[in-house]
Length: 221
Length: 76
Image (cartoon, rainbow over all chains, first blue to last red; front, top):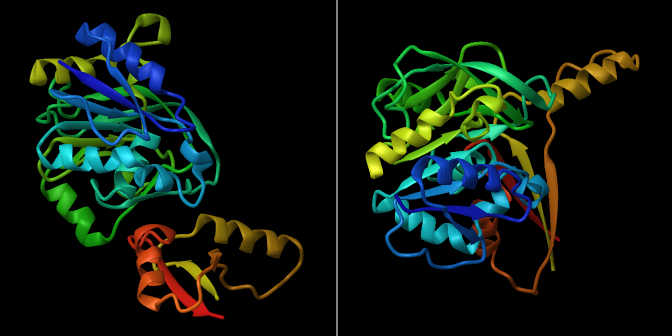
């Protein structure tokens, strides 16, 4: 599997993602600076990392979503390429219009940085096939703007189409219907606030995140 | 010319920051504040004669996230 990690100014989980991808897929990802206008040929996966790109100026992810590289990422998404956005990456995906809704300031106004319980709602995606539907994971979150908002029609459509892949099993940030991660209608773009790349070896406190990368490796080879 | 773009949360979108401000005003003894909504103002210095449609394009493409926000443009 050939992967790339996009690096925005202020990304801070790009190296964690790169380590996870290299360990699990056996190949180091290409690190792509946000000013790039073209993607390398033959990419199977494009990952958007966590962090605080552009210092969350204007809105979290707003500036990065208009970076030159995002035009290429949007085109790749349209061609069915797998796109994974973690935390700030999820915010960038909503701001870029690749995923519906928006991520607003946490309802409690607190920066939430702890392990949370997460329920796997859909194990039929390329990102979640190594999990069991209904399974509960413990996984870290670290964000100020993770409060997922969308209109009722959008929320109903996401639920009806099985596009809510991960849901918080406890109150975390005020997210509508406790949504933690969603896919686009074609199923090739996932955004989630929790950090699977921070749970890939036992020394990190668990390996629940590892299976997301194993699922991608199985699906994309 | 100058354009002032005022960005507000759409009605119905919860505003936790506005709620916190409201609570703080209550804590300071200001009674009767039944709601607070926080927004932002962006001032644009523009070439004279910039059409409104161009400023609207700026608002839609970057300044506001129209999933959750409304915007109003005032030309000065």
